[in-house]
Image 1 (cartoon, rainbow, N blue to C red):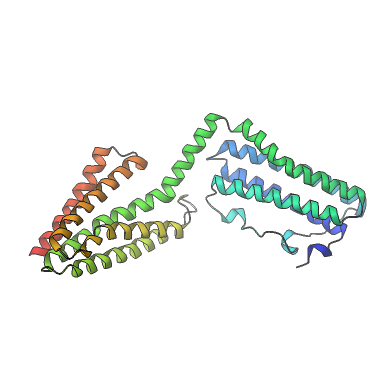
Image 2 (image 1 turned 60 degrees about the vertical axis):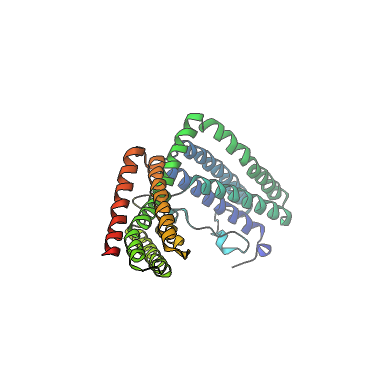
Length: 319
């Protein structure tokens, strides 16, 4: 890998040509990836791709005038100082915020490259072209704003916000809700069975509840992470889904376990039962808020299931 300071004017132009080509292709990839769910933003990146193609054409013309037809392959990864980014095709699904931040950093990096290259170039024509392109990269911010105003109408923004919300539900809310439901409901039976069979020992149900919550969290986390890799379903990175699901499962089980830190088992049972009710009502609200399930229907489904498991634990504990 060569240092930037070792590059000749010929090398700088060749590197700039390939950088503009690569940036243009990245913007094209952004546009293609966003076209289905965020068509207005995709149009913004198509416009930026055209700008990069124009820059590449100007650089190629200058190179041919100075050094001939053959343009050597010099890439950013061959020169020290450039940011090494993960290929776009490996990042799925692409989020709007990630794409826009990446585009901003790309423009800033390219502008700094042109300014540094211009400082080291003695050829006045090449220096002027590099300075012009550096200013053009700065102008891309304004061009992007203009394209945004043109394509991101209020209706388009509303549509993309809805698409973003759907992705959030698919990638975060669904695995988190599944974990919370499992942790809140599946740990009820072992916890309350231990509580009613402990004969006054508050540590016994606490340990059982803690073990059940941790075990359920690990199990649900692995199950969610291994269910699919998200490439076809659009459900996001499997490890992130697994972590979200596992943590929410553990949280759901820990909530009604903590009251058993209280020495008085009778009070602990009452507080734990109240916590369970709060958990089940919270799950019902989340289902209504994000899954568009009617509140009454969601409450009946969740609360009835929770009560059945709760009573099962009590019956086993007192038997």
